[in-house]
Image (cartoon, rainbow, N blue to C red):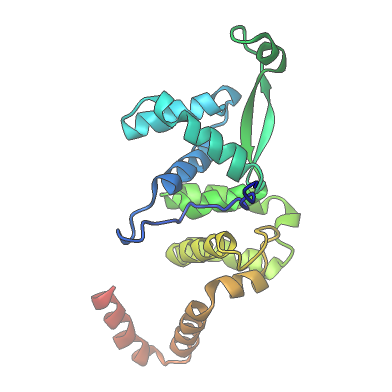
Length: 225
């Protein structure tokens, strides 16, 4: 009896059940692939082998040890989910004749992949760069107010945007929302759930305070934050 084919699932925020917040090997590998593709520009550095070399260097192992995992993540997860796309092929002079004729593929992130990259990148500078690239295409977000709000929040509340992106990607990974693009307020609402209600209450309540009443609240957050 043939086993049922599993639906591909993004695992960039998958953690060990017994180790709290520690990411699984699959999560780290997928994050590595996506981050690598978000920062590299040369096609020769965006092949499977080039990605394997880079991730191996970062993890103190050989590229051969992780190549099969990268191959599987690309072919069975990231490509089917349309987070990564084949951008072209590079000619090679060695290896099987068929491979020489076809060339080796190199990859780019899709618009959905850019959102995933923004959610896992370590620095605010890189996150802003990726989000600006994402917003360049008008079809990626059709609500002008949403686009403007996120751009403003990237500057004044970057940690909130990071939380928003993480919850958004996690919701997609868990099947709560069925697509990442176009980015829209309804899907963000589903992703943030009760978290947003608490933060909205805080924002609205704080905005209604007088300047003298705001000061002790600010001091409280400075002490506990």
